Amino acid sequence: MNKKATYSLNILVGIFFFIFYTTIVNAVLNQDILSFPFIILTIYFFISIFTLTPASTELGEKTKDWNAIIASYSMIVAFLISPIWVLIKSFKN
Image (tube, rainbow, N blue to C red; front, top):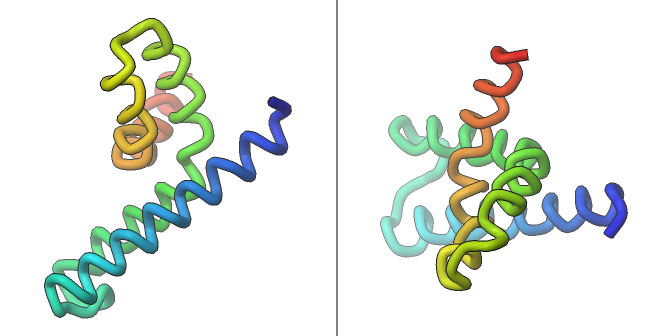
């Protein structure tokens, strides 16, 4: 898969996870995503949409030989840790 298709797919997956987060906060918790405790998570997950591509490709390469169950959750883990991952990688270089 070429880089443009991978980037587009990761953006779509990131948007899906972000919509899932907003649905959980709005419907299940009956809270506004722009209220105080949730605004921090909202900003973090919004940044995760755009930092998902580098983190998911590297995490996918590291988990490709692992158990299928663990490898299938690597995209969720990549979405959750991608801003931190990119920040650490940028300070290392």
